[in-house]
Image 1: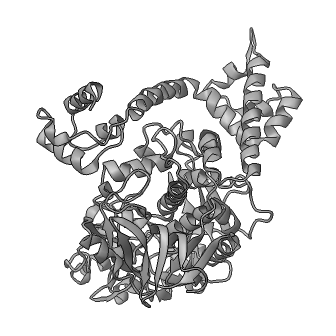
Image 2: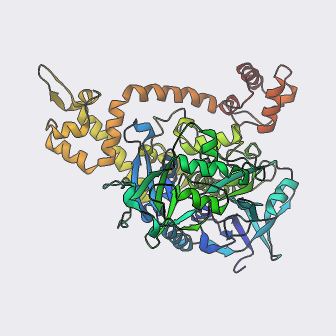
Length: 612
């Protein structure tokens, strides 16, 4: 290792969580070290080469609003940008970008190397240095020990990772990359409860051998909505994706090989993701369906390789290629690399605080897939918050804990702790009680004050959000004052806009708005979208804000550490067990714990009123 042997912060792992954690810590003033087994693979998109999508796009928008890196990198590396769910309600509109996976990593390395106070070093951490239940550094496989005030662990799928392809398996975190050994066993020895999860990835296909003319072409949006408030100066050349389907012949081949599947022969013990099953799992669980969608996604601008989204598998290599060649457009396809499954260790998340600090070991933070999540966006969100809170801990500040009524990041972390994942956790808009308030378009506005408190977002970014809010309020006021003349009456434009069949674009096209207002709406396209939502959904938004205020009262009722749940005789046995294990920070968090009844909450409230 070069440079100092003592740091403020050490981040272990260079995936999406590790990069956000290290970037945040260093930019907040910490002397930071990021240790990764392979520095050439930082923020590697090991699965699909895309960022965002349903609910995940909301997370990326929030990362950007708080000053994180992922949104900026995605916009720079995007080779196709789309807003999903445009035909549905505004709460579920979600941006998604197909990326050049190689450029994304290159851009991330470039950014991290440019951050003052951040060192990047190649190495493998095999142990933690601990004194009196407080982490004080790490030990490398080389034997070198490096001190730190805080350590963030972002192990991804590498902790005791094992890859499976048919009857073959090997120890690895990703294909051709060794696993990380030592840390998981060490945490288990220290008393942390360990679980075993599984995820998978599809084969990679040679695009030169694909007949795209027989598939449905899908282009991106001509006028994209970017993740970052500061879009790139130049947009990369845009590439199409293609849609095709599996069929009964495909399914017959897959079904006939289930006796060679590690998933069905019991060789894979880890729990896989319910919402992103392998293709062999799909044909069993959804046997009534005669086809499944397959999206052919380009891996980048300088490669002919394609990612068949929807064909994740761990079946033998010969079965994979045989099944693929039954798909329309893939009859002559060449498989560059087979799909595979990977098993890895995770740790039950009722063992961390909402700050992501470990309960058993002070100044140790866990972030990313080792907390049981799946997806780049979920990992990056945790990494960002872990980096922020590690910095605040060292600087003597209170941690930043986002509420469920503030951000999807708040929903994510709260879910991890109150509903410990028993399978890889994936974010959905349906997980939020306040999804009309937590839209992707208003992330900057709703997180403005907390972003100011954190201090990661640039002054320019803060001013941009403040200007957008001022413009929005001005446009709302203009719509309220501007009269629209109908056949027998004149009504405010805002009232007219509430009609289901009326849109702002339609009003502009019909020429019923003043030219100066039309010009303002055209220049401030995204702000105008927010204005239209706030006008059309005014009643729903008001009702949801009232619900959020009621929710906030429970969240603001703190539960002190002195409460001994075992001594509250009238508490149910199940409530005693889960409350003692989880130690909820607030009455609201206690309410969300499985096994805690309304009567249990009433007893806790009585204890709080009585005092210690």
